[in-house]
Length: 61
Image (cartoon, rainbow, N blue to C red; front, side, top):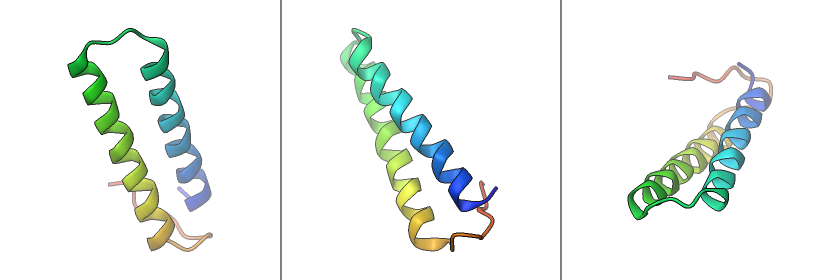
């Protein structure tokens, strides 16, 4: 998948996870799990931004 498509997908996952954190009354463990997931997604997004050129295919593994 191209870099822009991949970033769009990651941004959607981040947005949805953050909305879940705001909307649901989650226990502390669930909140920490989702916060960790957001950090992982943001880290992955940053890596892709630095590593791949705009027209380059992103290795999703």
